[in-house]
Image 1 (spheres, rainbow, N blue to C red):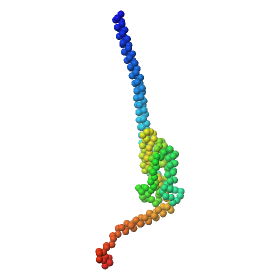
Image 2: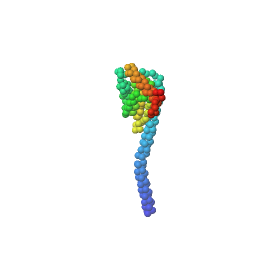
Image 3: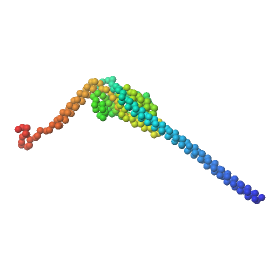
Image 4: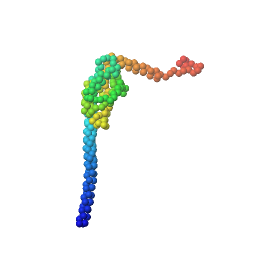
Length: 238
């Protein structure tokens, strides 16, 4: 009898150990399953973000390539210069209507402008240097926010614009917090043809200024007459 009692106790101890082990296993498993789920979710999110980033970078490159292609095509297309309705306008007033058309294109394509800077008649522009009496020039530097599709549409409209303009540079970066949004730095030049009276008046004024500058330069290049020493006479007087 005692022999069976010993076996029973051993069996009970073994069962207790197995029960404790099972409880520990269940506890560990209960904690592990959520962790595994979190790891799988993190991996899925990482793959999704990588795919979104790759897609955004591809679209960004397509926009840059399309802009370069359109710029090359635009060089071979002759366009008319914008002509203000009124005569005698200064550069700011003459360009304002032309820039209003560009602003409307931005609104139509849902482009948001963070800042806009104007530089009127920049001296490094070829039209200002070589034909300043005939054309008004305004260099516009704009910081914009747009989606890929909206900015692509804006560029298409800008290249198809009926009047001559020059797109100087385009810098495009994806917004870090949302890769589907673009941060754009765009610089372009707008041109307006001066009316005949204004062009003639400015040409005449420029000619007079050039003549005055030449006369001043000639007078400065003429050597001064020698002055007589104290108590003597000038050689020219002898």
